[in-house]
Image (cartoon, rainbow, N blue to C red; front, side, top):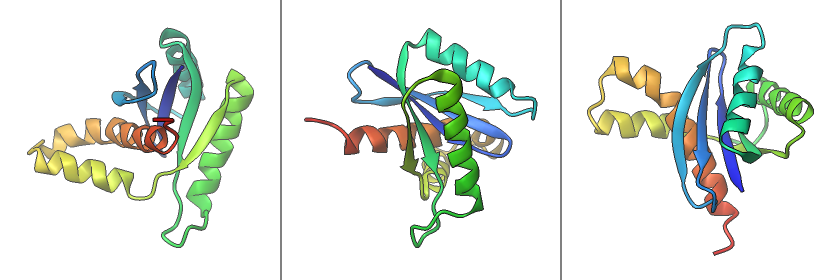
Length: 138
């Protein structure tokens, strides 16, 4: 069953999907948030198009493991996804994934302008890959 990984941010949502076996995550796209709820429509389209069975949402935790205001917003978003899509939605600790994605892009000599459009979907892929690795039955 394929999984969808989401890196939920104030302005953008990074999106990644897994292969059918749940072994690898691939960056897919970045959804621009416009404040009108259209992101849910796009996520619904992706769920249908990629035959998604589960969703993984990154949960930003503080370095001490507590959940702050940003984390509460992500929990609320995950609850809305569960309600609207009737799919299992998992929250996954995303500490430092955006930093890691930025570092990989910088090391790959990707320009600042291009990084802006890529970093969110790369962070989503890292979140999803970490989830897949932790839950693999290999």
